[in-house]
Image 1 (cartoon, helix red, strand yellow):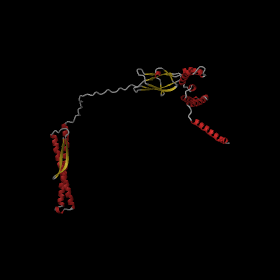
Image 2 (image 1 turned 180 degrees about the vertical axis):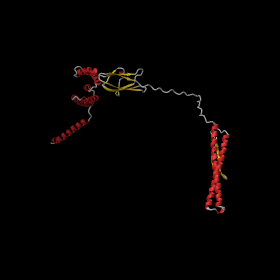
Image 3 (image 1 turned 30 degrees about the vertical axis):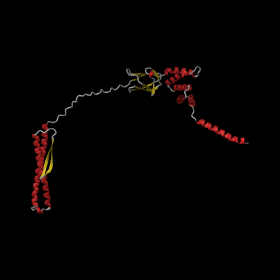
Image 4 (image 1 turned 90 degrees about the vertical axis):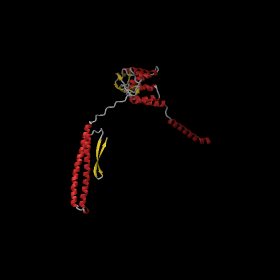
Length: 329
């Protein structure tokens, strides 16, 4: 009785074991060969439906995961169907030594090699005369073997880009479009080397300096400065005479308005202040005028060195206005 009661528990445990084993098996990643086989079967289904453009990527993925003669054979067949005749020809040529006598794919492979041969576009890559061989040549961003330079190289029909690089950093590019059965020459010419400028020789001898620009004649400069300073002096004397006359008039008005200085009205005080201002101004202008005339005479009679400058500065001196004559040599 005890063994009968334990039988359902044993069956349940076995079921759980099988279920866990199945889950673990499904969770593990597929082996490359199994994944490649699945891709291959999907590609075959598309190829049989005459859909090589979509089947070709699946065959190539299958071959990348796990190489097989079947995937390579179907890659070559689909490439021929979509017009990639050079790729198909190369893959059939790669497959031929792998097929044993009696293989059903062998006759088709041989026939395809014969039929594709005249359809191959061929390019001849040449380097310009005298140019060194490039260190690298790329065809559509893929490296080309150096042995292909100067010989015919089969390519698929359409547009292609060539890039050649040299060890010295130079580069050349070429773009070409070729049709089935055509042959074209591609010339790669590096750009000329840019010569470095020759070094500038250093000399121990002192470098000659260019002479300074000619200065204006000293006499002309002296005469111009004398006339300018003298003109300032004449103008200042004229201003001194005018303000002096106004000061004299203001003094006469003040004497009429304020006969007694101790008893002067507000108007009289205003006239007194105005008279003092005019007197001071007349004295300053007179001093500037005399100094200007004197400086002008000195400049005319003497020959100052280059760089001499003369300036007149008004100043308040003890007992009235005046001017200071500044000279700088």
